[in-house]
Amino acid sequence: EINEDEHQEINNILIVSVFSIGDYVLLRNFFNILKSEERFKHAKITLILSEAVKDLALYLDGNIIEKFFFLPHPFWKLSTLEQFQATDKLFDQGLKREYDMIIYPSFNRVLLKDFNAYLQYNIFSKESITTSGDITATSTDQFQENRFYTKVVNNICGINRFEFENNKDLFENIVHHKINLSRPNIPKENVVPFEKRGSRYVVINPAAQDGFRMWHP
Image 1: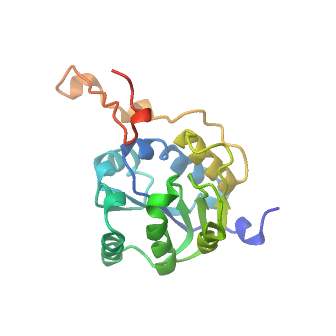
Image 2: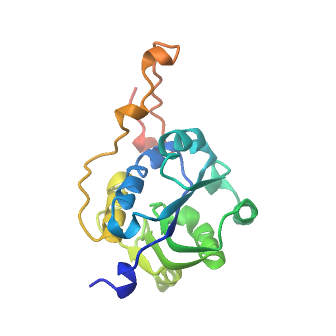
């Protein structure tokens, strides 16, 4: 059952994703999907991202995103106080104190729970949507953390699920229907031809934060 508020047109959205380039690539296709929905077609989207993705984000999505804000990288390694101080600087740079909807797609809630809560405390939103992330709910404390959000999309498929699929579940819950997207996609028009790059080589960096995610040589 859809709440009455979930039928109302959304005028501005804040999406928060402060991890690395891979996480951004697995998230960015859903911005256009939101904009294609009747409820969100007039919405202005603001992103809070890691500085690590700044060049890529401005190049790929500068045409559909109203405003970008960037936090130091790696943000999750900062102390809680440093995270809060960096967040306060965003308000000085023009981050609003009110949005119709805030979306927290990051699957790793453990690293960002204090930061997300700090944003929720400092920004009024009619709807705030997050995932249960890679936390198995085993205590009332974890349920208490979820009280900051109007909607929590539960992860029921295991902690090592592909981040793209987690994002897809989250946005399907936002638009209230299945999304026809099987994998991340960067349109051909966004890919600079080799002859214009001044190089005949492409670099593939198969690294990851977790060893089990890295490609074997």
